[in-house]
Image (cartoon, rainbow, N blue to C red; front, top):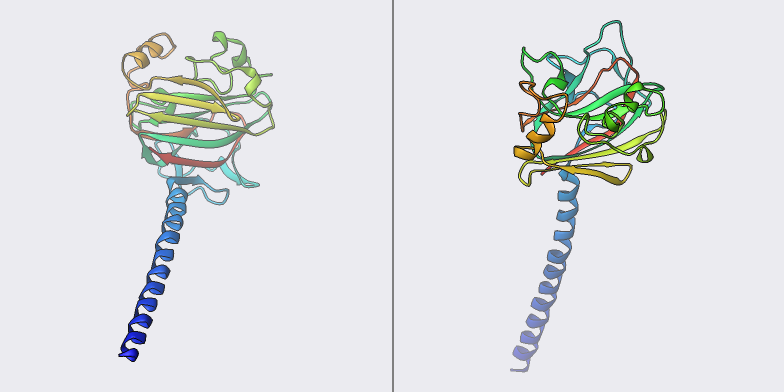
Length: 245
């Protein structure tokens, strides 16, 4: 009887210890899963080593004017223009984060919702643009009420000069486009610059008050490519990543 009692006590202790170990494993595992899920939220579009996620607008290949230089995607103008590039993948609702650096007196841009068609020769004919510019020396900086300055939603909403670092220095741009909430956001160097509608009556009103009024395809496509502009000036981009919403 005493032996049976000792055996019963031993069995209870063993089961209890096993349950505690199992509980510890269950408690630790979700933390690991959460970290993995968070890491997977961002898609790397350029990591400093490969241009594989990009190609030329209305091209199958990457234009030779775009190279990798010291971990950045660099554009070196050639004899002919029109060497805009786009992501191979299309996006609808997303947060895009990247850093850009412009040459002295230079001009470039960041597009979204770019739609490829033979009738559209340039990415800017369909894709709205966040301006990349040397505000101090490029003439675009001094026209249209500041809506052509760096960080601006081009020709629609101006970004203050004070949020932009000068030519030759890196600027961090974060663009959010969410058609589910009908809201776009732009932040420059950690400060939110603007919010705006991305479709519907509010968006159409902004377009009608801009140079894009009457353009057949401008801002009409909710799903499209991310694009970077050849405006004939050297420009650099790095740490390009995107998170789908």
